[in-house]
Image (cartoon, rainbow, N blue to C red; front, side, top):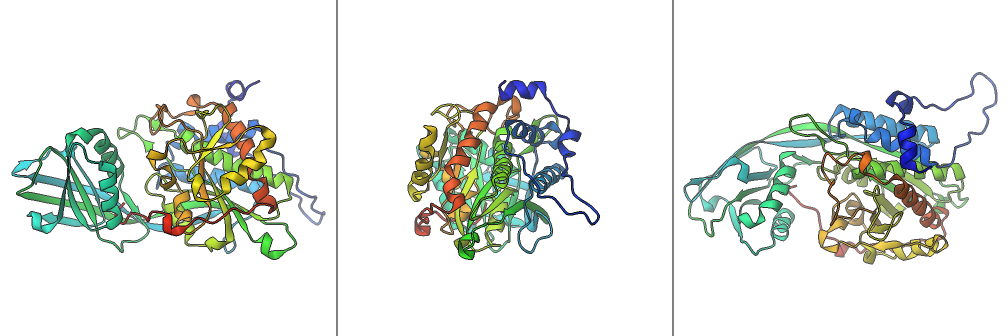
Length: 454
């Protein structure tokens, strides 16, 4: 029976999924050794069914539903027998961030008022009032210019910018606008900067007027992090960390609140993989190195979960980061196959492929280099610190019609392919787990820095 047929036959209720507990001994009786069940396709289905359910309303950052998802992941980690990070009483790594929401934006160029639907703003400034072109850095992105490259450089450099964008870039502009309208999240406000974009075909600017405001507030976010301690008798080896990660947040509801961005592929699939890889290695109980399993929050709004996480540990202790991002559908290389970002930045891919020869498969090089995927997930934060940190995915970016759409639900997935990917990752990374392979570090001087504004 395929996983998909099994899913239809065994549709579990939310109450059952969240009601699983481990039996424990009580009184003065001796506590028997806990036996952890091995990884199964049925459990993978149960986990992704819950995480991608309508009940969680898209797991938006700062929502009560993402907290429910976090509680579920914590419960699964507890059942598996994992322990919290040193110094923590639970699997929750809670921290404060500054949330910045756009409040008002009005722009006039060359005496002409620009319609609201043609305006977008990323700003860490409470109030903006630019009355002339001398008040701000101005830029014009023409029809044949590389909009992504220009905006990326402005974000990297920081400062205050007014950007006029030719209508030929309207589709990309809409993507930025949607992203900015969800607000910004910052670990701190040390940089006061802004990028205000106007979709217009003006080729030069003589007069401008810009008025904008944001609402700035402090909010709470939570990563879910667990440890499976290393068993090697050499303390130096035992403390070395292999990090398996994903992000468990998504986009929430549509603006009218009527539809759910379930985020089944993005990234309930990766989070289910992390949980079940934890179960796999815990059931074996022979990991020489310490294994760390993390479900990051706030990836969709800027990767702030992984940014905070990276500040709480010594990156030199992390031997490798296996970041799992969107594995719910077959890759272009076939069902059950996977590719990784930044393969040229360390020899991790080469080492993993040595292990996969026994399965007659391999980890492929990122087939979409122009998309800059190495920088678009939580691995980038750790890579900037020298960790061999890579994302592993199977999504076909050139064909996927469900990315960031309400149609990204469990019915759009190939669960058999997904389970094969998880199995392959368990085999490929065994050498990391048992301490027999150690990848080269990433050259931090060749990793692009983080943006200062968004």
